[in-house]
Length: 449
Image (cartoon, rainbow, N blue to C red):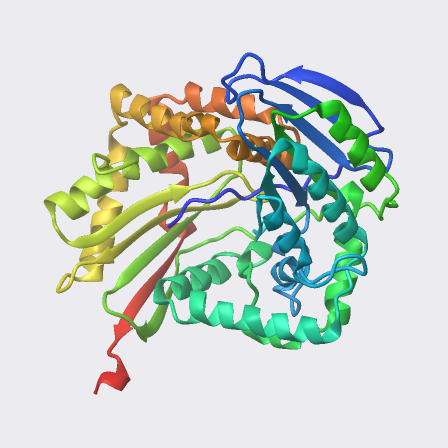
């Protein structure tokens, strides 16, 4: 499975405060500094000055991911992301991207379970365009009914291509919806097809007016920027937007899983595939750090245990992996997955995956192996220091979890992990009764007959 960050909702209910900090750890330059401010309407801004950055970045993040949807209305968050490019009374449909492009920049957006974000990369002296455009569409989106229906069709086609025509993605969807009973992580970010067909313009506009408010958003600007002038511009453009109703987080308790759950997906495909998902905690549980290291020990490259065993030695799998991310509002899953080689049994592959887990349960990995895994995790952050976009993204990720300073706590937690911790979490979480297994059973292509 591809690793991705799942972020937590955090209500910004602070009074208007201004602080200045020196960024540490993730940010390499001693000249780098971070300015933090909350406007009177609740909009939080983080401004990172990095004199060495050739470009500047503007990012705006909303606590409006698929976890904020409800049964029967899945897919609202992602469809709204599309509609945010469809214009306001001041700027027509698709004008946003054209303006950024003419200024020599690029823009894009993304939706996950916990948040949606929009960004632009520009020369530092062009960031005023981002501020003007994003403030306008935060408050003045038109959402034409015909445009809404047309874009809904686009998203439905996207769903067909990315999920319904992708057997492994279908397995992933089925595993999630089976693993969780009382958790919005159980539905796909893109939404169920049946729900997408029924979404109306009014549904979308109501969702927009509720969640796209300054007190439900975070702005991060970064680069070789003039913080004072940009903050003045942000106060001017965003400060007049009224504060919305405070979004209260819902406390969700997932019922205890009391036995393995197993599903099968029959779909036209070339090779059988297996996905094993174990219930696991998020970053607010100390065990999350050891689980991160466990995933790296099992599958942190070609020298890691799963690759060496299933691909190099036994030669039964085309691909094999383990993955885990703790960055979510709610506890999520630890994954094992593999695709069998032609002629190899998926049962044999499944057994081999479990054998590698059992080895760690019986014998803690060596100190050197654990240190290598910890180095890999930290390096994935450190190597991104040259990217101003990544620096801004790291700040936003941890701020969306609750506070950007959690970044340092995360690294400290990873560094504390000992071999015995890795063994302990394997014994505690990677157990049969907490496991949901999805198996792809390939069907022959009927059209080829």
